[in-house]
Length: 346
Image 1 (tube, helix red, strand yellow):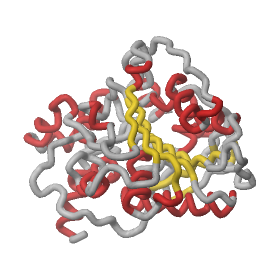
Image 2 (cartoon, helix red, strand yellow):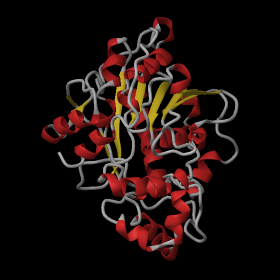
Image 3 (cartoon, rainbow, N blue to C red):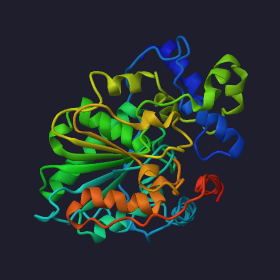
């Protein structure tokens, strides 16, 4: 990437706040992250930066959690926490479950933060489960913040480790938010398809969004970006609709032959608007909208990985022979947002 282009990219990066920021700023940051508008000259190159991001494999088994805040508090005291049942490299796949499952977290998060609810359920189902911390900034304790091209390559590195350890020939991949994008990029663009049976994207930012029309306003008033300068991440801006990574990811089609693709999204996703931009198009793709199955469950983006209905749905997709009908119970609009905010300050 040329120095002037990198400077432009970093300037825009400084105009983004992490998803765990205070409420007022987070709303504006959400608008920027989900932008479908592409400001002239902002994204000039589709090249990854030099390798700097950290890949980490947590090994200390932590307890199951029911929401992000509890996970964050536990992680603060146990920074090497892995979701219960995950990262047992002695686990051997069975004939019933021949493919290990690899879980990829979202932006500014970690394996334990996002998967402490789902991983134990998969392990209890007899599936070998693995969860990495990818895209970390050296010296920091959060992940998924650095160059997304590099993070995509890290997915492949970790999958190869899992295949070598387990003796399996393929894995299933489940990604949440950014995790859906980097895993799909590795499958579609970096030659990962032959190593994958099924891909599941939860709240996948497949095409970004206009975020209620706030992005054009922010683009028209450059000073707004300064207000959200603190706590920004490169990965967030690289996922904006119209950015080189998103164009690259979807160029030539959303899917490639041989892989089963499923998106699970919410009609009231707080980050991706319109919510139809979660969906993939092309052969092998199935798109599930939570409210089509359980209209009273108004879980949005942040709480999706801790929603019991979605958790059971994921287990069913990965273990269809033992599928259990999820219980449809009311979930209030906005559930999980306060947990994410408090987690940032716990």
